[in-house]
Amino acid sequence: MAKDTRPRRARSGRRPGDSGTREQILESALRLFADRGYARTTIRAIAEDAQVDPALVHHFFGNKEGVFDAAINSRFSVSSAFDTMATGEIDASMPEAAWLARTYLSFWEDEVSRQAMIAVHRAGLADSSTSQALRSRIEASTKAWAGRSGYKDRPESETRAALASGHLVGLAMMRYVLRIHPLAEMDFEEFLDWVVPALELRLSTAPEHRAKKADPGR
Image (cartoon, rainbow, N blue to C red; front, side, top):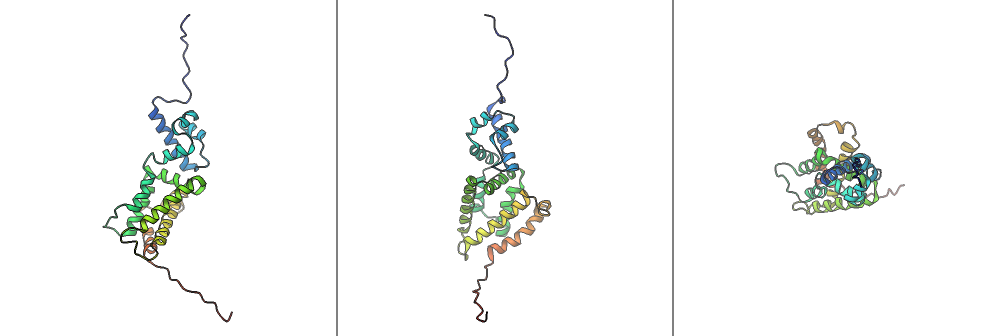
């Protein structure tokens, strides 16, 4: 029997080298999760952007949750970002509020980690399955910060830490996700100059609790 010398069609969706293909999928996934959010990003869309077969995405990561987790941790560890805020060594050369703001916002400012931060927070706000994971991470980080030496003895330390976290997360969403003017256009150092004084109030100033008595004449 004559040998079949006809050119064979390459298998659909595969690139030479598994590691290169995997990295391309992760790059596409991270970009789409950051741009579209978790709910609107599909396995098919990721595969199309990476120019591979959807079956290859399933082969590497199993499902969408698997590729999401791998994508957000492909540039840096998202968990370590929260841990740094909670347990990292504070730079003694700067005030506490300045260190806290600079450390947290630097993860957003850095181009390498920004897409992962955007993807995590967008997913946490829009999808119930990922919102619990984000909530647990923020709460754990907040409690750890409130329990730090030199901070835990302040009145209502956990409430202060939670308000400080909300202050920073809200501003990050406005600057880096929604890109609200003029925050999005500010130089990073100028942005910090505005953020830090308000954050200092969250960490140090106690609210005045006033008992409101009903006016007997009313």
